Length: 133
Length: 401
Ligand SMILES: [Zn+2]
Image (cartoon, rainbow over all chains, first blue to last red; front, side, top):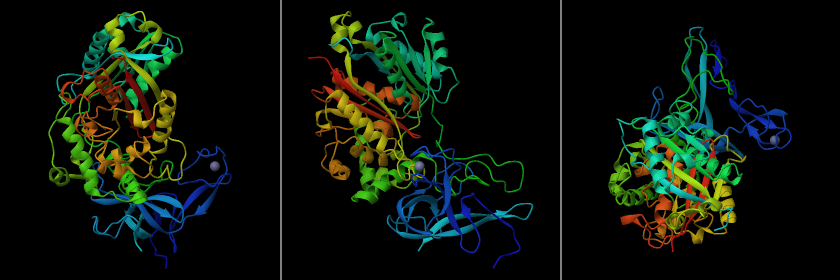
C-alpha cells in the first residue's frame, strides 16, 4: 500500500501508483505515439493528442551495454529499445547482469520502477526500467 | 560536358590527426589554399563560400576569409551535425545551379583531439535541491543513462543491434571484423589519423565503449580540414585541358533529413533517410550501386557500416552480413568500401568529414590515389550522416580517359 513518502516520477510519462506504467501522447488523427510534450504530430501535422497507456511488457529489439559515458552517469548500464505491444520505448534494462550472456536480443521484459533518492522536502524520485519477465 | 553540369575543380584534405599548434582557421586556410591550387584558381574566382565548423566560434567562414582573401562574396556558415561538410559542398553546388556564380568554395574544419565522448550528458543539476520537473518530458534529473543513452557510441550500437535482431547473422565478432577491414585499409592512407593494422583479437580486446563497439570500432576524434572548389560546366569549358581532364563530375548531390518512421523519436532512424538519399542519387546520376567502383560511407561506428551496406543498396535488403562475408567491401573486392580507412582509422573531424570523403573518391577517379588506388576507378559514392538527422550523398565521376 501507499507509503508516507511523497513520490515524483523521473519523467512525466511515468505514472506511479499501484500499477506503474508509461503513457504516451497519441495523435488522434494518425495514431502516432510520442513521449514528449508536443507542438504537433511529426507524421501528419495534426495537433490533437490523447493520453494512452503503454503495455508494461515487451520484447528487446535493440540494446547496447554502455561502458563509457559522460561524467555523472553510472556505468555499465544496458540501454535498450523495448517493443511494448507495438510501441517502441527507450529504457534501461535493470535487475539483470550487464553482459551479453544475460542480455539478449528478443528477450521478454517487463516494466519495473527504481527509487532514485529523496530530496530535502522528503520527496522520493522514482525512475523506471525493464527487467527480465 | 554539358554546360549545366557541375564539377569538382580542386579539392584537398589536410592530414587528419593531432595538430596542437594549428587552430581551426589555420586548418581551414591550409585546405582552402591547397584546394584552390589543385584547381588552378584563386579566391578572386570564387563567387560563394560555404563553411562549416561546429565546435569553434560562430562566423567561421568570415574568420577564414580574413586569412585567405576578403573578396566580399556571400558566406554561408552551415551546420548540420556530421553532415556539415556535405552540406557546405551542396550549398556551393546549389549556388552554381541557381546561376548565382560559376565557381564556389566549400570548406569544413574541426578541432576534436581530446574532445572525448560526444552526445549524451545532460542538463546541469540545478542549485535547488528538490526534484523539479523540467523540459519536454518533465524530467526531474538527467535522463541520459537512466532512460537509455544518447551518447553516440550507444545510439549507433543499438542501430547495428536492431539490424542484427531484424535480419540475424550479425554478432559482436562480425562488427569487429568490419573494423579490422577498415584499419587494414588505413595502412595505405598517409593522411589517416591512425594507420595501424589491427587483428580481430586486438579490436575485440580493446576497451569497451558501448557493446559491441570497442574503442577502435568508434570514429577517432581528431583535427582536420577539407575544402573543395566547384565549377559550372560552362565555366570549365573555358579552362585549360589539364583542368578539364582532372575535373570530377558531380553526377548527383543529395541532402535528406529523417522522415517520420515508427519509433524514430525513441531510437534515431538512420536508415530511411540514407535509403532515400541513395535512391535519389542513383536516379539523378543514372547509375546503380553495381556501377560504383568504390564507396566511402559513414562508418562513425563499426555497427553503422553494416546497416549502410543495406541502406545504400550495395546488397539486397537484409543481406548486409552476406555482403560483408562475400569479401565485396574489401579493397580487393567487387565493391570496395572505405578504402581510406573510414572514420574508425582515418578519423572524424566532424565538419571536414563530408568533404574529405568526396576527396577520397576524387583521388581515385582521377587516378591519383597512389598505393591505395582502386585500379580503373571511374565512379564512386560518398555518404555521410549526421545524427538528428541529415544525410548527404554525392556520386562522382572522373573525366580522365
Ligand atoms: Zn498524426
